[in-house]
Length: 296
Image (cartoon, rainbow, N blue to C red):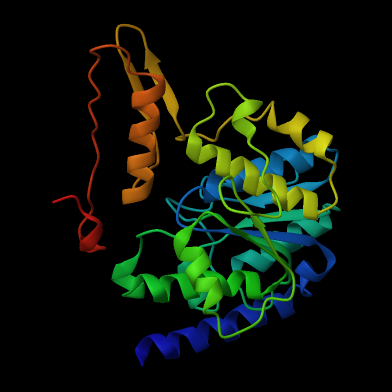
């Protein structure tokens, strides 16, 4: 009951903020990116492709907000800013004559109605795996919350190879009018394998690149524009980030979900650990959060 009352409060607050700033998303092409893993990389990649194609684009990600040429700190480990701040950033972008806005989005903000009043042109879900079950309680509830983003968009894009996503899509209580898919295994609207073009591209990043490709194609960019931009993309800070490479190698990576940790360890073992080399994994497990995703 308390959470429902909070959600009503956030809904009113989000709509009020959008009203105050003149509903800026209606004059921008807003791209929403959500999912358990790969959100930040996909967000930055979409931004990079649009920017490389000569488009005026701004962005909010877990790392920072980039409005025009200026970067803004959105707070420590804050993926999607507060409901009152998002319309403000959108208005700032609009005032700088930006055309596109890429917004990394969390399940918490979606569940709490903090994106109310924002109009999305395209929305993409990268994948859905174990995360935030301290808040959402079940994986089904978590997945249903993620689906709210594509319900809010003119075009929804999902991962055809992600089991939870496909199961959730088939059981949705609402209809998605324009749904596109991407994948490397199952039949999909988009199925480009960037591992053929980009040396040492991690398997999980092949999906992030493909997600960005699908979004940008739906926005009208050409295959050549996207491929050219992807070839010059540099991963965001903390994503397979080699910080020391002399007698031994030190890599910093943001991976913190069971799926992400498994993927990054497989990638490092495959690409960086040779012969009898040792792989030492140092990770943390913060208290007062989802106990079920702990290894022990």
